Length: 238
Length: 248
Image (cartoon, rainbow over all chains, first blue to last red; front, side):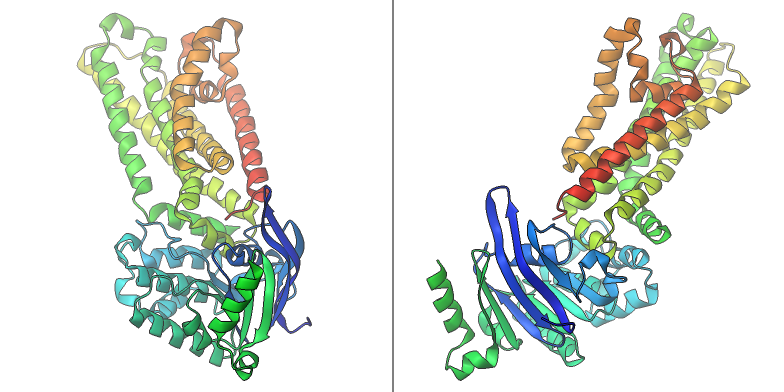
């Protein structure tokens, strides 16, 4: 864990009442890597991402982006972009106005709103109310929000959920393009075969604990696929 | 802060919610004032106090819908999940809440002003149409719209504070309606002789514009200060809860 870490999680524990969501979780993510965050439902992935983004408070430990708490970043939107849920929109607001309201708050010019709309291929639907959008369009609008500040780090929670094959293909191209331009990505997913095509590093968690943090090529050198490793580890863990 | 406020103002006008509340306000004030102005017997509309009284539904409707507007600005974000992107863009929650309060107060003032002006216009027209001499003074013509605007603006802020504490949209809206329409009336009705009712926030709101003079209300300035204190308390409670709780 050094200064080049985009994400630093140290001894993070998060409890909701008596339920432990994340327990003593420690990992770091170097800038420029694409990391997959995998684990069964309820393993603590979303909770970790929420704490990392300052939406939830850790019970103990810390979760930092670029060495600081998210809310202590000088200009968080220009450093970190995130998509946590596929439907965080007001159904009666247009896609363009959703982006504009957030752009105003971040003091980002409307010009950038048009750029991200082009980037996620939503320009033609931008004036329609979000309730008329398909799931794939909503996922892309979420990504457009994440890209508003042209961030260095993307945090995506299940971005492929509910996407059709064309959408998945589009997302893969998109994440690759972002990484090729030097961006760092932390992406959670259940679609392991898909994920394996994207990531250089994998974090496997279960029951709120880290089971493995390894480079993907180390797995393949051992003759394992990501799915093999996942099944083996999560079976032991349960 | 200015950036967050501009964002809130765009949110306010980019769905049909605000317009829908405003249309409801117009419809309700028109209906209530027409019913009062034309429906009450002539004997109940003779004195200045009686004529002031028929402006009361206008004030109450303006205040209530402003409170709902304020409450929806925060509970709507929680309900639709937009609170997540909102807080990612503006991680300082106090700043987001303050922006919501200012934006709601601005729209709330407009609601209160409109409700009072419509109430006066309809009432005076009704009185004239029935050949009843109008006894409202210049002070009444000024105090009703200004007091109505102030009361509605402050209640819009109270709505934001209550919404931030309760978080559930339906519970917040029902709670605000119940408080302003029933709870205070019941408490006021029973406790008027003990002078407790006039210190309640809804009744203080009515007192700012000199409504319901038969009820031994507080003086307008005193009522304004008292309601401002309630508003500060609601905002502080909202601020505490917003900072203490996980957002998502």
